[in-house]
Image (cartoon, rainbow, N blue to C red; front, side, top):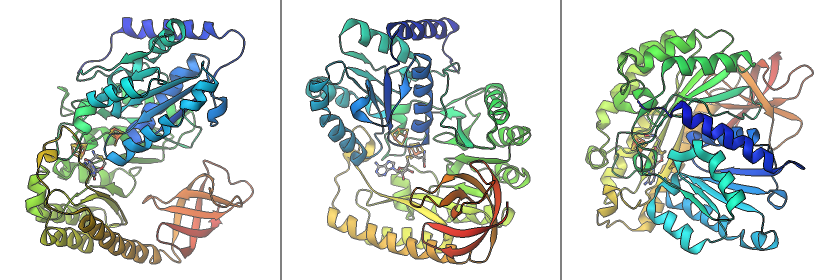
Amino acid sequence: MKTITPEETKRQISYSKRVKELFMTAAPKALVITYGCQQNENDSERIRGMLSAMGYAFTENKSEADLILYNTCAVREGAELRVLGNIGALVHEKRRRPNLIIGICGCMMQQEHMVKTIRSKYKHVSLVFGTHTLHRLPQLLFEVLTEQNRVFSVEDSEGVIAEEIPVYRSGDPKAWVSVMYGCNNFCTYCIVPYVRGRERSRMPERILEEIKELAQQGITEITLLGQNVNAYGKDLTIGIDFADLLFEVNAVEGLRRIRFMTSHPKDMSPRLIEAMASCEKVMPQLHLPFQAGSDRILSAMNRRYTKEGYLDLVRSVREKIPDIALTSDVIVGFPNESEEDFAETLDVLAKVRFDSVFSFIYSKRTGTPAAAIDDLVTDEEKHARFDRLLALQNKISREINDACLGQTFEVLTEGESKTDASMLTGRTPGGKIVNFPKQDGVTTGSYVTVKIEKTNTWSLMGNIIRP
Ligand code: SAH
Ligand code: SF4
Ligand code: F3S
């Protein structure tokens, strides 16, 4: 495992100071817009950490931002098109305010054809960097500010681990902690291994140090992150696996809730299930993508398990953790998926009865093996299947939520509800969203006991019975 050198860290800190010196009078404002998964959210926290050290304040308002930075996702075409559309629309703002710096970073910028597109067609973008050079932001920004040139830093390296980057968190009672980066699985439809590099686990001491610090700051819930989080430790030579890590994190004082994502079925060891069952702070929640139900499609996807294997796994998880909330990801319309194949996917939904499912229509990703398959299924057919899948899952989610009526849950208050200012919102141990009326003394970070009075497909509503 490679980490960045202390010299490199020092160099970036000195650049950070130099950027700060450029703004002697007023603090500049930055807007960081994040697409994609929690890894990207976590990267954006590090970006904000570096920007804050450089003297930047933050704004949500494009027209008052001195720096607008898009942290992008490449996993589906839709996400890419949205970013390109938004950046295209900024051309007028840049004309109006030539000093505005527009930047793009993240997974999209690890793809050569995208970088080319930005270089030639989006000339108002002056800062571009990929996932492997995030830690160099102070230097890159210094160059943009002083050289009046466009700066591109996209390395095709396997990636290193940068430990010393400051992190700017939003003041939530919960935090994300990346424990590993990258992915080795090469599912045939997926771009992630190409844009995030190979699996690299952080050393356990560094992870625990970070979590202890968070706990001391009053954060009580953490989510351990990795594209393939339960493969943690496989690339280290110190004989540690994800189950060991869970035990160690479980022992951190002050912490009350531990979650993790995303787990790959092939790395869900019996030891890990045991660890989840026996660590009292590990919440009864598991996000376990199955992607497809047909063995033929699973094999074409290179998922390395069968439908029966997946169902067996779910059975053994439920045996050890009966109240587990299960969620999953599924892809509809992988090239040449037949009606029979799709029926197997619906069958998995019906058999497992997930609490909720993130479903996606297959999106062709340049450079992945599946992109080369001649696909005979029409878009119309794919959309029709997607709607059928959604209808089935919504019905199941609703039934599971309805069964929560009258039950009580411990809820960690996360803040005001986005849709109703008289309500607070939080999550149950299983991760379900619960809204409940405000009450004196109950603030963000409070644990309360809530009795469920009303249910929806996506959330629950209740009253505090014990603050
Ligand atoms: N590492 C995680 C998440 C990867 S990306 C995992 O293995 O599950 C999140 C989800 O996006 C995937 O689970 C998959 O369902 C979906 N996805 C990935 N590539 C896709 C593609 N080309 N088209 C449609 N959905 C895709
Ligand atoms: Fe993509 Fe598969 Fe890796 Fe998940 S496990 S990130 S779907 S290649
Ligand atoms: Fe997207 Fe990159 Fe995450 S491609 S899903 S932001 S790792």
